[in-house]
Every structure is written in C-alpha cells, then in structure tokens.
Image: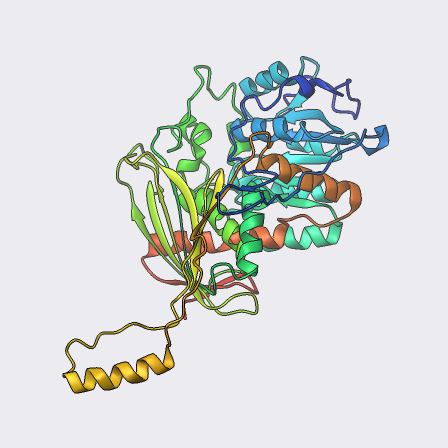
Length: 475
C-alpha cells in the first residue's frame, strides 16, 4: 500500500524558496486582473479595483506549509500558483502514478517527500494545508479526512460528485473550523468584482436573463489527455484509485482520462458549468435555481466515454431579496468549429455585461420614455387625435447622449485570478477571515450541475432547493 520514498514522520527538508525561480511554468489558468482599467475614450479617467494584497516580509512562524494531493496537470498548476504567494512552502506530494511523483521531484527538488497514500500527507505535523486536486469522486473523502486532521483545504472544483457529500463537507468545515476553499478561481477575478459592482449600481437596470458558454475545439480540451508509455498496474495504484467507485479491471483510460466517465467525474456540467454558475452566483448574489432542464449528446468524441461532448441547460432562478426572477442558459461544446470560447453575459432592462477571460464589456441602452408610434393604419382623424395626446404625454425634449459601450481591460502585469484565489485562501488562514468560496457556496454551485446531469440522462426537469441545497421534484 505504501510507496513512500522518504520518511513521513514529520521531518521536512528545506523547501523554503525553490518556487521563486519557477514562476507559473505549466500552470494553465484563466486569468483575470487585479485592476481593471476602463478604456473607453469617453471616460475621463481609468477605474481600478485593488484586490492584490501586498505582503510584507513573512515571519517564519507565519509561513504556511503545503501538501499536494494529486500531482496531475491541475495539481501542478495550483501548487505553482500557491507558491507565488509570499510565505508559502511546499512540504510533500501524493499521487497514485509513480511517474507523477518523479515529476514532482523534478519540479520541486529531489528531496521532496512523496507517497501514494494521502493519509501520510495529512498525518504530517509540518503540513498546515493541502491542495486536493484529485478526481471528483475523491474530493469529499480526502477533504473531510484532512480537515479532521487539522489541515486547511483548497479543494478543486466541482467540490463534490454527489450532493449528499457536499452536506458532509459543510458539516465538517463548521465542526473543525478549518479554512476550506473551492477552486473555481473565477470568483476571485477582478472582472467579476467589477461586474458585481456595476450590477449592484444599476448600470444595466434590472436583471432579466443570463447566458453563458464554455466551448472548446481541441483534443486536450475534450479530455483526450496523454497517457504515459509506462502506465501499468505496477506504476499505478489502481485499487486505491477506484475507492468508492465500482470495481473494474485496470484501464489506463479510466485513470488518465477520468473526466470521461461518470464513475469518477461529473461530465461537462461538473467540470465547466460549475465555473459558469459560480460566476453568476458571485456577481448576482444568487443562491441557485429551482428548476433545471438539460440536453445534449455525444457528437464527435466517441472514444468510449459515457458523458456527452456537448451539453446545454436551462436554469430557472426564483425571485429573492438579491435579485428578481430570471432565466439562465448554459452551453458547453467540445467540438466547436468556431474555435471555442468563454463568456458569461448578464442582461438587464437597460443594458448588458459580458465577462470574458481578460475583459468586461458593458452596453447601456435605456428604454426611451416615449413608446413610439404605429398609427399609419389609423384614419387621419384618429391619427391626429392620437398624436395630440401622445405629444402631451411625451413632449419632445433634447437630451444628451452618453457612451453606449464601456470596455474594462486586463492590466498586463496582473498575476491572475488563480493567484488571487490563493491569496484569499492564505489570508483566511493567517487572519481567521472568510473565503470567497466556502463549502456552502461550493455546493450551491455544483449541486445544480448534478441536477443538470440527472435531467440529461433521465430526460426530465429536475427541481433544486437553493436554500436547503437538496434535489427535489420539479415544480
């Protein structure tokens, strides 16, 4: 069971500043700025949001020592980003494929302790927090065990594979008092912060509709991840990997391309819709929809996967104190011949705002006071009578016309929303403050995506209680 190649008794070789020279190598994250400048030439001065926390020199006893559980592409990207934050150190790494453990040593030093058993990571006395970048079906178990061992947890999205597991994490987070942050990093984006500010200020009027898309046009985007030549039952701990999933014989596709299978992942909805819902909930203050309908299918990537490569959803949001009733449409297409793209668009009665990877575009179109005329089919006497009353109600008054489009752009020196997300996480650990995406927020984002998958496969409308965070019958 144990494939440790260094003692996990709690000792830790010096790992104080190795990452400083690595930067973001291999970290693929959608970035959003720490300051958004409004670049439309009709605005006299740029507008900035300062979300970056300036760190003074960190005292030794204020350092946060990290363990990485799951050293695949997302885990490496997360750890590289975390180590950009001052006062953060890497202590140890865990993975079920030996090659990734060797890669961890190549990235972070030959003396880095590594293991196949995550329990050895959370048992270490020199680990303060862990990054849980494992498969979806392991998120709850590892996060729960880590918090009960006194560790803070940064858990990749979706927070859980099943709704009931989300309630477990909420309970454990409250009981242990540990900091728990879900890794939908877009919610720490200054783009979304600016959108939230503008929506609250009424810049686009009253919310009526939202739409979002996350399309891709590549094999990697469709989860056709590369499989190492030495993949085998000898180099992969297959039995441990299966965990609570159904028992199956060794299959490298199910290990290295796990997102393609319902046993271990959550499909398009859990992987990408959860980002879009997190964005919408952060900007609008929404708790979630109450009705979900989803459709889609397998159009191109017929490689044995049992999840669709194109999925769409309609999510109905009830009226709350935070927002009026509105509807959301979602789409993700893994064979988008248009080249793919990301966008979240919020539509109001007097404008809209579109959030993209590196910009925020706002259009403002106020309703004219006068409704207009359609009286050509009236007889002349009725036209005259109508015009007389119309002109009395809506006298012509010249008005200044302001700009209709505002573009907020990403500053070139920004480190990205994933960096900001980790800054938020580490500040919460150091200062005992709240995070932007705790377990409750995480469940309210991923719970409706499970409803979406149920709707897709069962071909029915699924109900969701956004307050109690429960799946129920559609209303």
